[in-house]
Length: 235
Image (cartoon, rainbow, N blue to C red; front, side):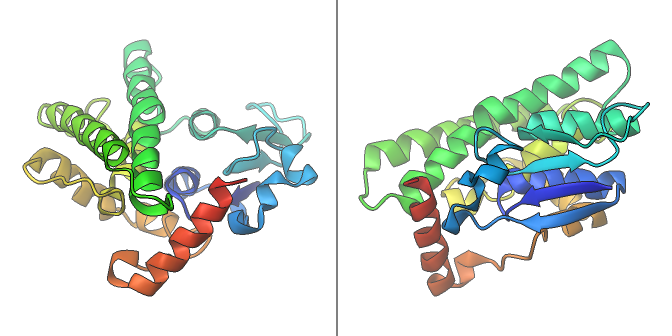
């Protein structure tokens, strides 16, 4: 059994979607970011950086688990750990594994940070600083165009098979409207988004720890969400 400490964010969903796709049993422990739960001492014992998600594998690490619980933080590390635990969603050959990790790192070093900053300046920052908004939205769009080129030549990011690289990028790109970034004129990216959205495990994973309704259709809900996000960013 795996304990998942998480919140309904793109990074949180990277862990829950991976768990659902792998069919691993897990127990969800919701973390209230607005209350700064992730900064409490007990949580920092699991992740010194005070960020979600974190998993704790109760059986321990490796195929010869020793029964000693093992904590993993950082979403890329979590996804690789789970894929290696099950021998799924990560190719075993050197080139396939490398391609998967390259596109996983592309999300972690590019798509996530750029969209995250777009969210901050477009949605959460109390002042509207247009040059900052333009910077991060434009860079997010550029990264989408990189994905478009790749997906125009390959069904999935790392090759012929669906991998953790697709999960990681999808969990962020699917929220492009909240970041204020268009995907117009990117048919391969749209095809990829739709195909992943249709996967039952992915649908289940983005409802963990609870389902967040479409905030773009709920102005009051969007304001409340942004206010809570703003508070968590200030801590």
